[in-house]
Amino acid sequence: MANAAVTVMLMLIMAVVAATTEGAQSSSTQPNWAKKLKTRKKTRSETVTNLQFYFHDTVSGKNPSAVRVAQAPETEKSLTLFGALLMADDPLTETPDPKSKIVGRAQGMYGSSGQQEFGLTMAMCFAFCDGMYNGSSISIFGKNSALNPVREMPVVAGTGVFRLARGYAIAKTHWFNTMGDAIVGYNVTLIH
Picture 1: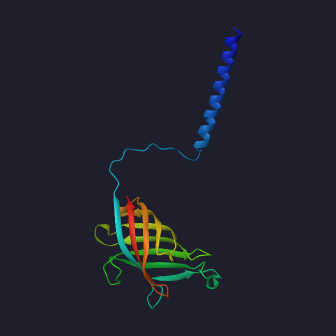
Picture 2: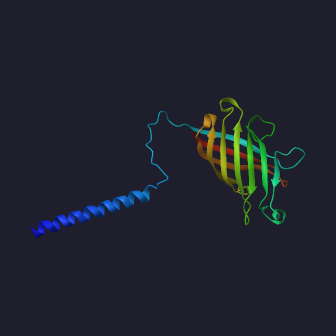
Picture 3: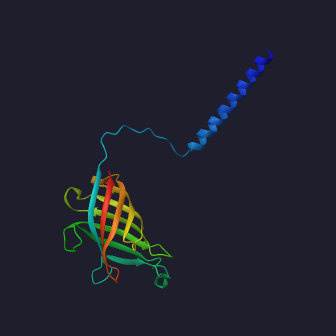
């Protein structure tokens, strides 16, 4: 009889410990402000698209496509132009030739965000105006180590044909001058 009572007591203790542990695990893995949603079955497969075009950023001359709109008090004393913010409306073309067919525009801003090394933070919308991509866009937001010959940036969103896009952009400097003008080749891989 004593063994049965001990067994029942041990089972009760184990049940209480199990219930307490289970509650603690669920509260630590699932916060109150978030809900786990059931995923629905895919109704169609995702598409992978690769785009290649050239970005023409002109900061000099009579008709620049990017202009400085703000800067920190110490920006001009900084070797990296830390704190400079530029607004851009740059043409995107099929080839590096500035007179080649325009396929879209890069509209947004970039700022010098590195104090020790030159680096830009880009918030840019690439809005396309050619063929089946006319009216569609992708958004790039991230670090652009512009002095590196090749760099990678994230594609964080898209509209139109590229709705819900994600992916990455590989940028490779094709040409630049001492005034800061540049032609940059973009190879963009999108999942949408």
